[in-house]
Structures are given as C-alpha cells and as structure tokens.
Image (cartoon, rainbow, N blue to C red):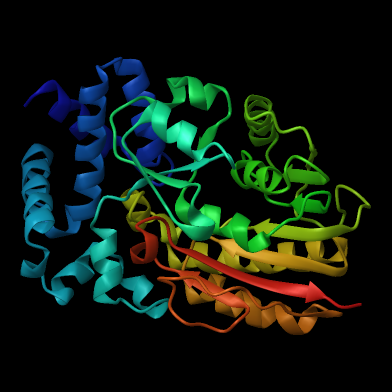
Length: 373
C-alpha cells in the first residue's frame, strides 16, 4: 500500500458515530502535513469508501475493500447505467425508505461527488472569477453562485482574505435568496452556527439594517465573529440562544430564519459517512427540537414579518411533518408563498424541497409563514 492508501485505511478504521470521518480526516491531514495533491487523494479515497462500502466484500481486508470501492466508483463515473436502481438502494440505510422516496435520480446523486460551490459578494463576481479562475457562474438570481473546479487552496486566496467570496453550498445560497431581506430591515438568524447565512443576509441587505445572529454554541459564535470581520460585515450582533422561550433580545424582526439542527440527509452526497451513523431515532429527536425552535422564535416576528424554516435534510419527519404540526400552533401566522425555482419539483407554494440532483449541491427543505397580527 502507498502512504496515501495507508492513511485512508487508518481514517476509515477509526471513523465512528462519535468521531465522524470528515472531522477525523481534517485532523489527520493536518497532522500528516502531506502535499495538497496527496491530501486530496486521501480525502477522495475515504469518501469513496463510504459511498461504496455497502457494495464491497465485507470479509476482505480494508485495503482490498478500498480498491474494490475505487473500481466501483470508476465504473459508476463512466457507466452509471450499468447499476440498476435496486443495486443503488444499497447506498442508503434501510430506515430511510420510510422517510422519503428512493428515486433513481436521488440515488445517482448520492453516488456522485458533489460540486464545490462559492458565493461571490454582490458586484464582485467577475473580479473573483478573474482572480481565482476555474469557475463557472450561475444565472439570474444565482449569478453570484460560482462552481469551482480548480486545485487552489481557496482559503489562502487574497480574494477570500478580502471577503470577496465565501465557500457556501448552492442550496444554502438559495435559502438566503428566499429570505429576500431588504436593506435597512431587521433579521434574526436564530441558528446561525458559524455564520454562513448571516454573511449572505448581510450582503443582500447591503450591510444596512441589523441582523441578530445566535447559536447555542459559544465556539461557533467566536468563529462567526472571525468570519464577519474578514467579510467586513458590521450590521450584526451575536448572542447565545439555547432555543428556549427566553429569547436573546426583545427586538421584533422583519424576518426570522430558523436554519435548524437536522439529520443532514441532504448532505449525504458530500458527507457519505453520515449515512451509516444517522438513525431514525436521531430524526425523531431532531424533529421535536425543530418544532420547539420554530414555536419559540415566532414570538420575535413583527406583524407583516416572515418566519422561515430551513433544514438541509429531506426526511418527511423533519420537513412536511414539522410544518404540518407547527402551522396550527402559530397563532396570527399564515403560510407565506415562496417563489418558484427552476430545477425544483413542484410543491405547495409555501414549501420548497431542493434535491441534490437539482443543482448538484446539498438537499434542502424550506417553508415560510407570514405574521398578519
């Protein structure tokens, strides 16, 4: 085995629910200090194995399984039609069949390495493309979404250091566009994490008005502060919020975004290890948390304001079921129609489900309500 193969096998053998492969991969690659090309090769091998591990001989050694998985990935890339839909069903755990339709299109998307998406700051798309190269851009409302297919370490690029672009999946960018915040308005990014959507909301607001960004994790808010400083985002305040009825501010908002914690099924093409560590019990527990977040945060929406719920998952329990349970409990609210999007299957006007095959990014569910009193 080469050193690349050995490190990949080591990471695969140590990955677990408690130590997810993506995090372990970052740690091991940082410690190994490999050349960038070798680091990328290790990552590709690890993710390839988790995409195809259910198809290989489980009794064989890990290095042999790795070679078999790589061969399957190569065959799939060149001849996807040689895999039947029934065969591809092995790419997901059995419990998921009760939560969503296993269409061939989705299964194929799961086995296809995802695109790396960037978001250029408004008005800086052409400059970013010129500086970093190897980009193609979207059209219309997604003109700032850049598909990057180069080899550079983007985080070292001067344009990134200057805040001209962010690494952000295209489905997450669509969420910000669906929020449609206006310059001078007030918004609350209630589950902000490290601030990807906070940065997008601020850009759409032209750095005017006010955004409250909250999360239950203090380290994430520290990271958010670093990102906002680099991106020159000044129209925000950060505060910890644990999801309870005690809100971090008495401010009433034009819009509240609940980008809730979820099972992450929509990210399975990008994070294949999660397919084998996520359980139905996780989905059910998270659905209860999501309902609580929506109902508690609703109190912060002013009349005429919007409450938007988004999750990067596709399970019925965390999407339509949550919306169905919350709607009758949201007194003074009504479903808020969302604009139609190309490549997005028809749905109820206040709900949008984005599949990974729609834009070659993450899967996402979005629904919205408007407060009328």
